[in-house]
Image (tube, rainbow, N blue to C red; front, side, top):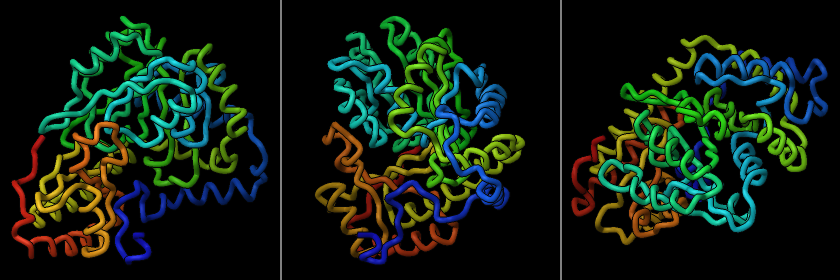
Length: 375
């Protein structure tokens, strides 16, 4: 529909710009030098070694390439393989709400039961009492996405400690989706749950290349877990996809060895884009939640629209901007049906044009709402 109406697509979390030149050139060289057949099912050895070095330095996770790391077709498959490997029919899986769209279908495919813990309040804080209630049922898995899509929340040490304590008490395994680990703002720092307490023994840490290197189409991710869990994940991964794309695995070896300055520059780039879109939302009089990480902004629907679906259709057809109704990512429609998600992983010029288009909203005074929600 975005293409049909000539709208700018902020509904999907994929960049409209290319990855770094050296990353693209590395892929071309890998194709030219015969890295075009199956790799080892669980990933090229040199890539697993690069992942081990990277997560040791940046995440504080000790991982042995042969025993703890599985290269998957994106972080999405990493989460899917882990759920199918670990959850039995009828067992509970805790999912924060709203959520990345694949988690609940993954649980359904495993025959498991999703248990929802909502983000609530002015700052979209995870409801701790609801989480404690869910964990009291002794669920098999807890899926945690931090930095979070779509809320933009980054879980701090105290929040992670509570989750870690609850997981240990209930003997629950955590699957952490950390795909936005290098995209944080306002002094927030990403912390891997596997580094809290004894959680390295009961955490599957999932991440990937898509967001960090702007290669969402390459489909390279990884799952890190203790050996017994890794063996189960590898078995499921083998029958799901056999292996991740070999030339792109080769291309990412050098990318994973990037200096810290690369990741600092990445965060600054997305902070600039975040501020461009926030200004556009301010100028349009839209209320929104200031993201701490990832590259999405949730905005509230003006009072003159019935719900997020109606507002999204208006933005698409009349304003020329495509956004996602948050109800598509939520089980609790009462909490989500008056929110929409803007993705700002776009060129600065694209976001500036979005701001110009959104100014059309200010021509309708009744649609203006309160100032933005601050974190």
